Image (cartoon, rainbow, N blue to C red; front, side, top):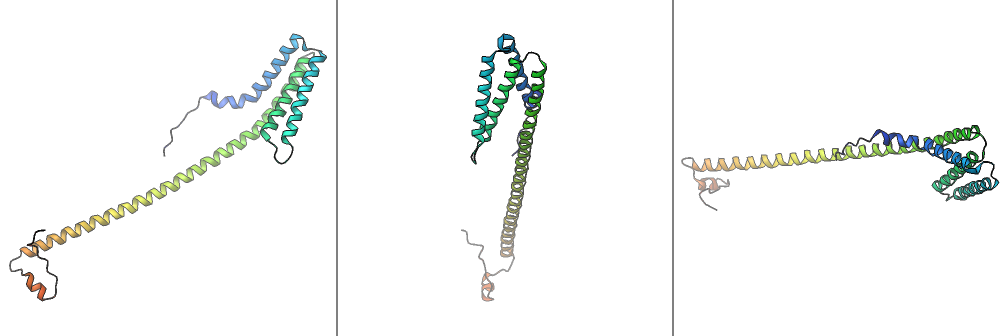
Length: 199
């Protein structure tokens, strides 16, 4: 029941916390690279990004609609739409101030959404650990009770064996006494055990 203690590397702890910033920074960098390669003031490129972002947002709307909406697909579609919009602004804009402003806003929104999922995950992990600990304590209690019961049965068996041994010793000692006559015991109505017979 003892589980090994696993120590995770500090990078494994830090990477999930840095993922939203890494994602938005990557989109900003790719958008600026696209800007440097001719996307600035290109109507065709802007139209492409607007169509893709609108399509992703529409897909997210359809995925979240109704009672059976899938939150994972909807979240992915909306994140894709936002990422495309950020890339479009970073690629189409003249300066760096508007893309940086949108990058900061997108990073803040991404951390806000991620914090909600991190809280839920932490709550679920804590509840799971609590249930596991309770189960272990229950099983440990049952094991202790069974160990006590088995110990008591062993002690009863030992005391019974000791009693039988003492009784056999007493009978042998009584038969060895001078003047012992088993027939006299039988006449008196007491059970007489003949110890001279060999079985």
